[in-house]
Length: 143
View 1 (tube, one colour):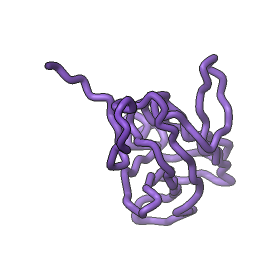
View 2 (view 1 turned 45 degrees about the horizontal axis):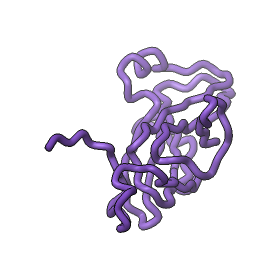
View 3 (view 1 turned 60 degrees about the vertical axis):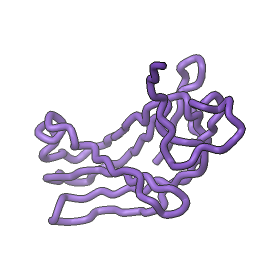
């Protein structure tokens, strides 16, 4: 499993630190030796304090769920994009899971990857105090 970030030129690079102001990809490569029905690959993003921030699966979208109801044997890459201005600066833990819901768990690693989020130029970074909480969205305010 890799975490990828795009640099200023759009190039992909493996990284353990991402900028909060830029989107980044989580990419999971895997091979299936035989077809699997109902397979879903999931990520679990947690703070270093053990707080679960969110869970997402590669078949959450109904179209992907229908298209991949059975995955033939072969090589796959499942990836998702974490949007810019979503995570606060700090360290995060990514868990992954591959399972067929209520049938079989093929793989689970609760601490598959740890990475840092750099908050340079994040919303409110002009203020000296640290922002609390794991999310730091760029909200549109009007005064």
